[in-house]
Length: 389
Image (cartoon, rainbow, N blue to C red):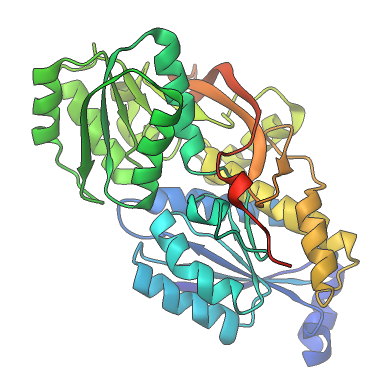
């Protein structure tokens, strides 16, 4: 899938379409998300959140804005080729994406070494947070471990001594279990890495039933999470606390519904975040798309705000690379999540929360903040980053 669109303030439309001279002042954005297959709902939220912000802004940094949307198909080789096309053929200034960390690992080099800026609104792999940090790479979501560290801290607070761990076998899955263990020092009942994309968990659930751990901690995004939650409930295991990140959220809850009620997750934002800007975003998103936005959509929206602020700070001068970099680092925008700043590795410093799945009065499902777990939390890899000039 490849879609081109021009997003223009009305007064600029005629001059842009008149000829190539105006096009020289365009800012070009490549959006790369997983938009097909079982995980498409994650990518669709990221894309839709960005485009909603763009619709409200009108243009980015006062410049006519061209957006090219591509589907990475959740395939690293496909994503790498499309990333090369975005920077070489489409000559985008920024690539926003992707959804999954294995895709981030695949597109990082072709984008950043081209001179374009890569901004990830979801994937936050550990290598790029530490020794492999790069001046052209920014993350507006989190470092992958952090959401899982929330659940490790919660498990420790609850006094769980025997937790079963399960995640898919790829970079983000490994980061998830590493993150959980970073803040949890109790016993491990079992540890399983499943196939990425696995949808039948009967064998794993049989092991959990036999071991009767104090809790399950899992990371299963997209369709994997939908099936796991339903099968967990059907297997009669709901009495064992279900702790997760990216497994029960607004991308999966429309399919999970009652099966996910009462299950917990780590969060840096939830639709009931108590600030005016966030409430307005949730209302606008639901009116436009008919679904409850999750963190994927929030990060997409925030990424557009970040780009707009940075471009305005350099007066739309895309040739001022150093100034643009400093403007991005300053993160001079009001995040939907409240306080937000970049650490020295271009990963966020922010608050993190325990969230729980609830059913709203209108029958829709969402996550709801229970309490704050970490305050102004920077990831554990930043100290290893020596940002190249």
